[in-house]
Length: 457
Image 1 (cartoon, rainbow, N blue to C red):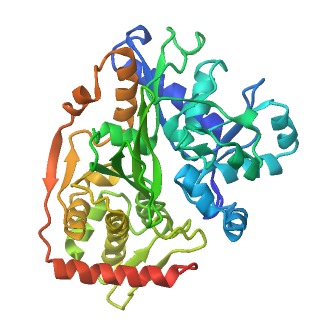
Image 2 (image 1 turned 135 degrees about the vertical axis):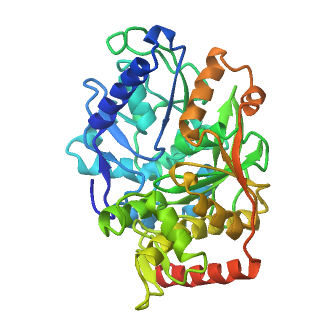
Image 3 (image 1 turned 180 degrees about the vertical axis):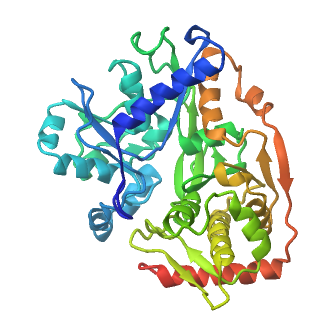
């Protein structure tokens, strides 16, 4: 729901879909709920819900991670030169993307919300916390360290909610969930939901869950997930790496109280660009058509699509930038525009990798997953452009896999991360084979196009 700047989801629809999915999975798998040893949850990290502790009812729709309504509010803090302080504590930048400004907006714009929050009557959570609350019948108000690290309210150095940041964003501490390890005792499902009580034993934000599903447990290993947006995380080990290139320092995962950090670049629009070409412009009927169109058009496409529909993410962080198409001629057709949409995802990934390299964190290679990872043309162009080998796993839905690994780790299905790492299998590797000069020329065209849409250059 919503326009390019305002995006919301119905929390009740998310809840009903989750319960229905759980029941259908068990039914179609020819098992019973008694056979399920644990549940893992993964979720959109920054999407924000506030609900009534007594009734469990949300006070408003969830504000989605892509939402830009708080851009002006965030600018106020930047104008006061507070971003360096916030970054030191959280590893993040001040941007509408993160949860804090969304919480503030809900408290100030829903009648009575702020007063009820001050009295401890309301609860905040990202989607994981809301689902956990509902699954446990309101007994468990918790989250994990990865989701907490995306709120702009969590100190990733001290691993706790930060009083200075709570004061800064005017968020009552009573709203916040307890922060646990990613693999932990989060509670059990309420008896009324399923035929058995099931332990909930793993939680991680979607991108960190994908990192775990890709078994990127060693320092220097990186994954990139191509869904609605695109998110690249590189494991930086036990030490936090502060970025000079406006990337994010974040909690990669926390197990047995030990934090592993990551550096992340976030692209707001990846698969969403293809959805727009299909549903908005109606240039294609199905996403699967894009691969053949790109093959026919070729890599040396001179049309550039900058999909800044909700601003630009890393490393630009320009919430007011808007999308554009450049290089149109009378010869431009559907193939060129669709190919430009695919290439925009690869160009944005190169932006991220370049920023990581500038921070001294060059990935040793890249493991990819998500919906667009099945497009061979895209993956090959990505390998060419980045000039690194790309590995695609047998299981590309690594976000769900990572959540399952975390739950299994807690209940003893898996003994260690080393055991999980041995389960990873490569379906196909892609190696660079396009001339580096051609790749550089294409990328310079992209950089020129991006400069044209930026408002903070």
